[in-house]
Length: 124
Image 1: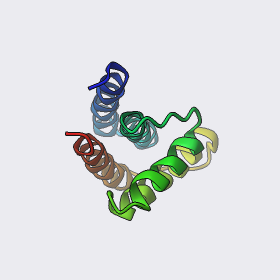
Image 2: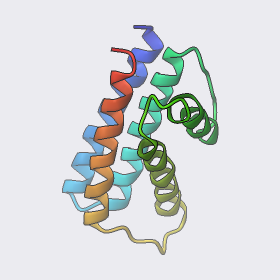
Image 3: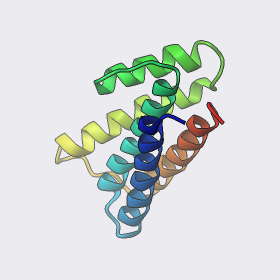
Image 4: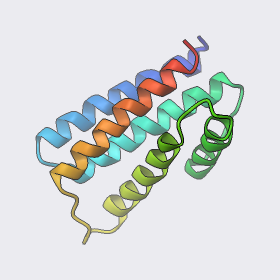
C-alpha cells in the first residue's frame, strides 16, 4: 500500500474516533464535521490507490462518483452519503443557526463507518 494511501486511511480512522467522542459529549455538529473528514480521507485514499489525485472537496466527491459509483464498484448510496454529509458539515460549520441533533449525528456516524470500510475494501 502506498504510504500516502495508508496515511489517509489512518486519518480516516482518527476522524471516526474523534467523531464518536464528540457525539458522546453531545456535540452533534462537530461530530458530523469529523465524520465528513473521515469520509473525505477514505475517499482520497481510494482515489489515490487508483492513481487519481484531486485537491478540492468537490473534486474528491465528483471523482469518487465517477470512479467508483458509475463503474458499479460501489453502491450509489455511498456517493450520496458523501455528498449529504459534506452539505451537513457546511451547514454546521458555517451557519450558526443550524443545530444538528444527536440522532442525526448517530446516523451520519453509521454512514461514515460504512463508507470508510467500503473504501478500505476497494484495494484489499
